[in-house]
Length: 57
Image (tube, rainbow, N blue to C red; front, side, top):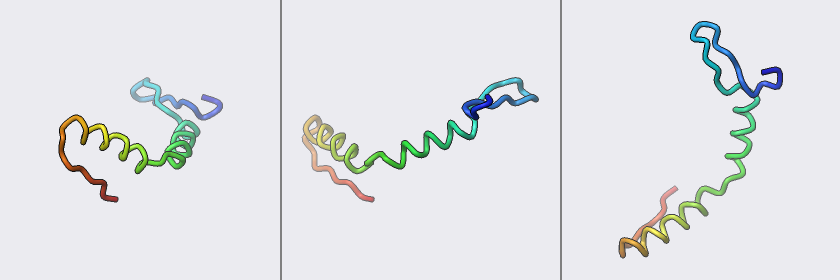
């Protein structure tokens, strides 16, 4: 909790991700090439279903 990886809701008593954990996750997502992953997934779908596929951004 001191690092900001978790936070505690005093009302519900539950723990959740903290602000620093959110920042780390967003930084990682910014480095992901979504089109590359989509291309790989769509190639597999095309082969498996024998259909024409496309990516729109």
